[in-house]
Image (cartoon, rainbow, N blue to C red; front, side):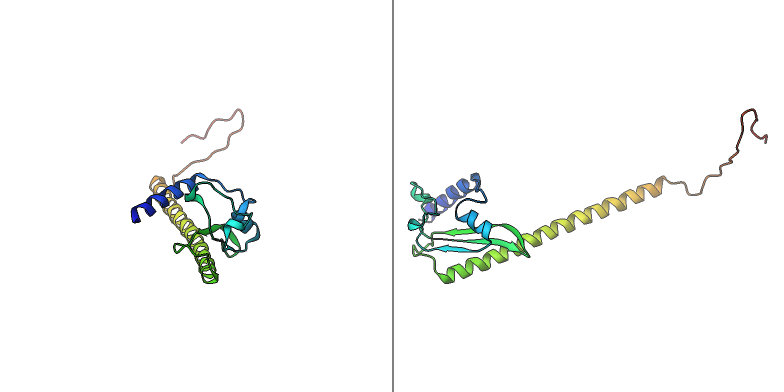
Length: 158
């Protein structure tokens, strides 16, 4: 039974990774546009839910919550078909909203970490460039004799 569930999960993951969801379409689009989480206990009777002939893609119950942190929208967390076969309830709804909040914070923190790593690399590159420039500069300023001439005059003799 466990092997069948793993195979089904991989199949669904492949399908979802190959799909694009327009921001103004379906439940995901509604949640993306409104910024509000949605729970649908009976998806079979809700016209907003896309119906599929394939039993592996059938949606019985779903929760969709926006992944947002500090006003920045990152995506939509959508959970379908509880393992026990019962419809999602308010406790599930609260849990998924909390998970979406945590996911938003994690994505935000990952972005900050990425910027910090880029800054560290730039600082290292600048330090290396400075060291190379210091090696190329003369230790003492060169002595340069400057003279001005006008047409018809010769340079000064030494």
